[in-house]
Image (cartoon, rainbow, N blue to C red):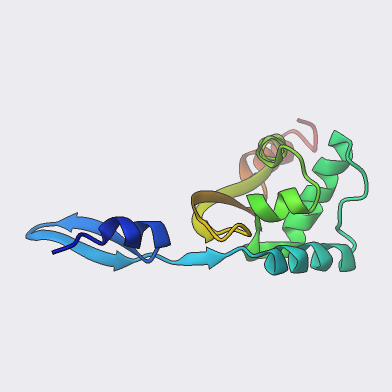
Length: 143
């Protein structure tokens, strides 16, 4: 009998989970991140006025924050952010996390190259960091 588990993993269709009594198979969602999808996200950001207009770090930070706010729970993936012009997206997100509550979700995607990429980051903004809001309220608006 031929073992097709490597092929299934390569296609991202299933993931083995071990439990009492042996392995069980759970379906794993794999998102499409095609060229068309990425283009649509970039066009959506531009149409909403939150497209990147300059490459300097300060502009990237301000625009990325506004883009994440606009996208809401959909967030922005590494592929989408790079296509939108953000270089070193993870670094920009890390800088934003100093003031903002941003969650990093990991997802498996089929990229524009047609390959499955595991653990691609998707960043979702939840709002200002609560610990900062509480400290500014206690100090009368000063950090």
